[in-house]
Amino acid sequence: MNLNDLQNISDHFGNTQRMPVLFLGHGSPMNAIEENQFVQGFRKAAQEIPKPNAILCISAHWYTQGTYVTAMDMPRTIHDFGGFPKALFDVQYPAPGSPELAKETVELLAPALVEEDHNWGLDHGAWSVIKHMYPDADIPVIQLSIDYTKPPQYHFDLAQKLNKLREKGILIIGSGNIVHNLRLIDWKNIDTVGAGWDWAIEAREKTNNWLLDGNFQNIIDYQKQGTFLQYAVPTPDHYLPLIYSLGLKDKAENLSLFNDELIGGSLSMTSVRIG
Image 1 (tube, one colour):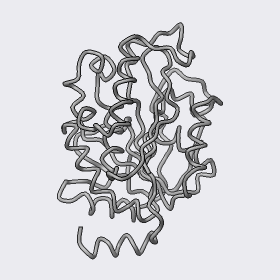
Image 2 (tube, helix red, strand yellow):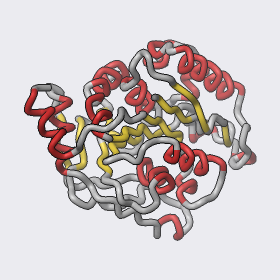
Image 3 (cartoon, helix red, strand yellow):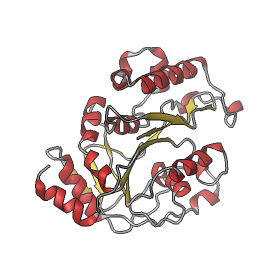
């Protein structure tokens, strides 16, 4: 990043105190319209941090070949799911976008190729949680996609280039789930908080310990850690947003957990605050 890049950021977003970083376990799309302890946790997280100038969200649900950033003035609300009540499809989250922040994100991530996108919008990994945090939809939101052709270490390293945004009032949110195996959901306990298969309980305990101990390399190298994480992370889409959030942590910063529960046997709502 050169001095011109720094000036561009300063022109659009003034200096602020360093913003925290969040990873939010978003769970079922129904969390968008239900009232439960998890959405209360999202609201509480927003209340405990400064109001951001803008939000950059890395969602599990924008999983692409290559890396893209939304660059439209008004992103559409994407209902990227099926089989849910009409009330969920009726939800709109009309937050503005920020073409300026999108452009600066492209510049910060160079020499990695990141393309501006004008078609996507806000998927439910973004709006279903952000709507609880900032219900007035008055904060610009952009999304950064996850390149499925790249390994976890690449995503961790790429995230580090976004750190300067934190000093400009930009809240960076990773949205996914650490334990996320929809094929093995225990439907009898789909709404039972604390319900987890043995492997899910082990995955939650091990990853929580690594998070709190700062042992991020084990989290990055999750495929080497044993059967419990193979079950917990059958595909990396919901796991990689955590890697982005961890890549933004400075050594001296605190890391804490909230919404730290299993549900439905094979899903964790564990969320992380950094800073």
